[in-house]
Image 1 (tube, rainbow, N blue to C red):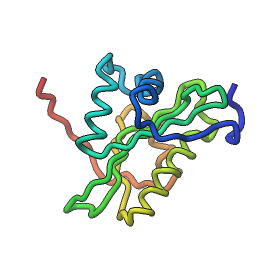
Image 2: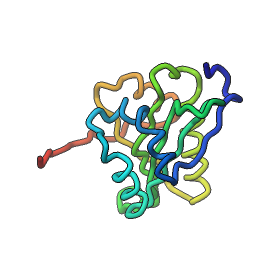
Image 3: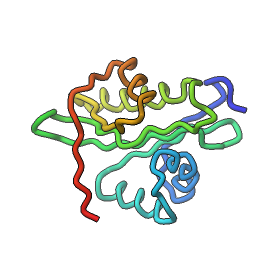
Length: 148
């Protein structure tokens, strides 16, 4: 069992096998994901520069994932958009989310970004508390129009 932060490694998932290894954890956030997951991630990597990282235990089990893209916006300048930050339910509260978020912040600083933006579902109150504690501000409402 993963119990200490020194028992992990964070790796970039840039191959089909590494992406496939993140599916079980990513599906805990995105319940609709199916067998097209690897193809979708590879498309996002190719077309949008999506970066996907996994936190692995000493037994190479994925216990957390983070995915983000670099963007430029008129409203916010150069940003990282944090698409996904998911920690396996059994590994929450061990500091994995903080370590993965630190990786995103490090990338943002290296690329001279002005901000990190993300959306978080209204029902994810524990996640809201995590982001507020990490220094994020709640600055907007998120609206969606489903087309399918």
